[in-house]
Picture (spheres, helix red, strand yellow):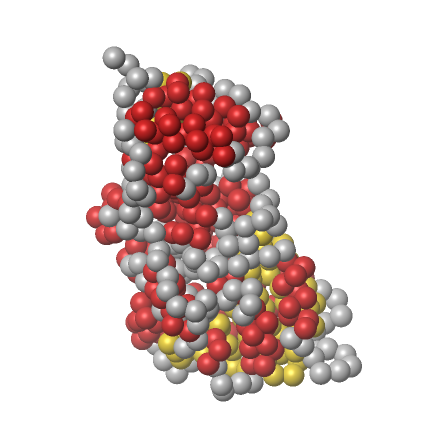
Length: 436
């Protein structure tokens, strides 16, 4: 006898979806419901229902997806985008299920034989302990994401190993990379833009601090292209080992020093220039003032300080339940104006804010193409569940930037005591054109 699991689920969630399911749903019993031309979602296991019952909404759906209990046929970005567009056209806004709906769902789960205690969290869900943003907890959080595997990241990122938005000057932002202009070119343009905004083109040998240096893309470029004396800091052992090897390979040992060090522990200021690329999101709301103070403290008088940082404009400053559970549990993002206020209170004069949201869309698309091409290798390296986490991560990130729920900006500031700053009165052309 057909239990019509899909049809009964469709009837249950109709109040949340504003009517007919926005997807074609196939359940584990073979039943189906929803428009034939809608994105196709499969509930491969009744365990997905139990997860959604205990964690209604994004977290339960993400847990079911990464474990394979729920699947989406075809392109994940297209599927998520179409569902969001359908719900928006119906005027549906995110809301929690009512008490009555949860009671009906509980009865339905009992009939399906899936009622029970919460299932164990997926192994990829990050469990963090300790005081929020303590040095030890921050190291654990960074280790979970950034120390996954250097080989893993090398299959997704460009040759620079730049894990931040590129700056696209030689391609259509609505198009793709090509043989004439690749992700490597766009990341080089970003690195060079940061170096010029930091003032490294003024003279060779400037002391340059790279806070949260990642796999060393900016540190290495600053040393090789501008002769800067670079100090890079990271709290990832894997990243430090990777950069140290590249420094040795490229003969840059007299110019680049990479430290395993928290930003709060830097004590050999001042530097002639300071930069920090997409690291400020990880310091947390309560610690952002201390991070901004570090940027200002480490900069000498009239030194340029360049921050590239993501912004967010909705009720999820941490990125939402999925990101907070599987990617970066303690991340905080805010509108760019609030970040500017933090920097100004720390004693920095903000001189330029450069919005680059569309550049991140292009960058994530390029990462996705590499990810898809290397999927079999990635599964062998880290397992299917980690790969499914990244499928969801890349798709969700792309949509967040594409739809304007997230942004990314380069903020250029100066440590100025009083009077005129050392920055030019007219915005340099080279801050817009990497070939300027």
